[in-house]
Image (cartoon, rainbow, N blue to C red; front, side, top):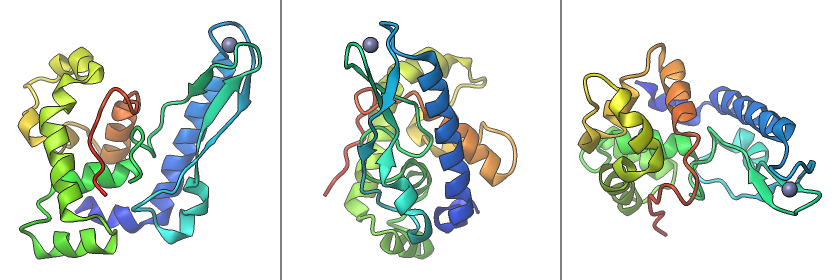
Length: 188
Ligand SMILES: [Zn+2]
């Protein structure tokens, strides 16, 4: 159903606007030392990104303090930690069985995501996601409990609304995950 969103530039632009908001908020809060944050965005080469919006996804919003030089990287609904594939692909392509379903296999080919990478993502969701500080802190709030062995599909269905709204809400929920907090290995 919602896999068409993986190739919908409009939806990617919506996610970018949310990231801009999150970045503005982080910048407004400033550094813990009281210093002022300046733009110091990381360059990215996003994979599984529609060509129409690729230039907009070529940097990850981040800031550097003018006093202590520490970095602040705002939360993101576009990038899931340090993975080169965009969060939307990591979520949606993990939620289906690309190895068994011809349409899904076709889509992973179009997006240039090797099946091996999909397998690693699924393994990461099952084995590592339940151990993240985010899930440790929030998992118990879902009633009835989420079947973590079926994440992210089982988690996605807990968010209400249209396909766009469900996905956006899930990505916002996941946005505190940093490269360190969750380690869904990338594959080559
Ligand atoms: Zn500082």
